[in-house]
Length: 202
Image 1 (spheres, rainbow, N blue to C red):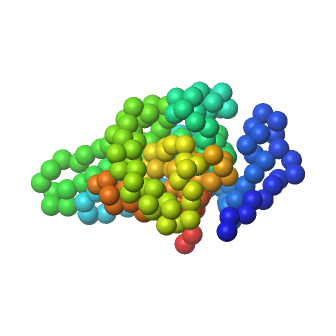
Image 2 (cartoon, rainbow, N blue to C red):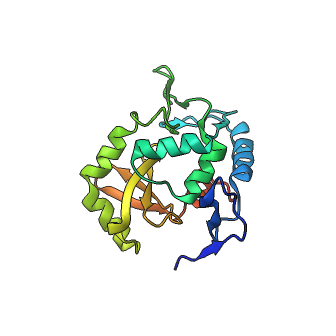
């Protein structure tokens, strides 16, 4: 059901680059360019909820030593895809905006796209929500065909989305959790998740 494409050459300083999911065609540099092109032309919609501001760009990524330190902070090794992502991007350069469609309240700003290590403490509540509702999370993962005995942790990504981390570092599926018991597997891979989140396939 999930096959690996083993690359013949790998950088010795980044050994996780020896594996990839076959369906991951776009690399992270291409993703950065394509998503920033889309953000550049965004319009603020007259609706409730946080929105990405026009002109938003990604922060620079981390180096391999910073990624290793972040893994120690979380207490587990990250999936290959997430490490590759962090080498290129690490959260947005500005907060998201929430407007009042009725025009009665001032605009609200908040960071919903997490940046690490700065947001490790900020995302504690989401990690705790997952922990408190792990039975619902495990049920959804099992229904999707995943072995929950091999889950080692979760990394919050964006708003109420989080990446499930397995002992198998080729896996990087993303879940959505809302109000505890509302859990879905949002995407089976990190790249597919971001493309879906930002509607980049159009």
